Amino acid sequence: MKRSLPLVSYGSSDEENTQSDSEEAVTKPSLPPSKKRKLPTLSSTFVPEIPKDNPALHQGRVRTTPHVEGQYAAYVFVPLQVERKSKLAELLSKIITKAKELVPTLHRIGFDGSNEGNMELHVSLSRPIYLRAHQRDEIKHAVRRIAKTHHPFNASFATFSELENDERTRTFVTLEIGAGHTELTTMAEALIPTLRTIRQKEFYSEPRFHASIAWALLQKASQQQQTTDAATTTPVSLEPLESQTPPGPDPASEQFPTIERLPSEVIPGLKSEFGSALVDGAIGTFHVDTICVRIGKDVSRWKLAG
Image (cartoon, rainbow, N blue to C red):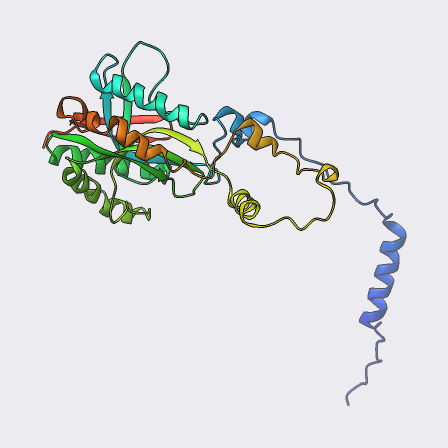
């Protein structure tokens, strides 16, 4: 005969949890919330300095492409060395003097005002391009290949022209290339595969190779519109002229004068006075035997040896 065992009463799990929680509440005092510790300020020596665009340091010129850390502005060009006492240097000096008489705000290029050393003008083979650090060697290799596969040649100036940069912030007095245009085109086209690889703009489809000899700041689009409106619109104010307050001057324009464009008589005047001397083979002809690439402040040069 089986004996019946007495039933044992067990507390429920809810009761145990309640008891355990109450015991913990009694035995464990509440702790104050921990304070977050602030990290020390990073020393300025570890923070890269971002270049500030200061037109006062660059004759009013401003950066047209925002600075990007690790990015380098570059362009490919053919240099033209002009000996200080050469006939070409003498002619260029006369041209600049005349141009500045007509447009006093012009800034000369390649002339430092001294009587020592040679001048260097540039004939660009590329637009301004912007390289990442790892792309610098790639563009150098491309320029070196061009140097190895192209022969030196003679080139000459053909005429004067006014050209603006792509951003329309500056206008230039330039000497356009006549003889040598074909060779320069071939060299510029040899850069295209590399420019496509690094996703940069190619040179112009119909290039006008030239050497710039002077530049001037252009008015902004808003300033040009105001100039146009003032010249073509009749004032509608009914106030006496004496009581009207003239618009305040633009401080930047006062410090760095701008122009809408070169006066229409400048280029024709230069052609008339100096055109025949410019195309004289004994003056306006030069030898091209070097190709260069400027990356940041560094310039690499290779002799043409094709």
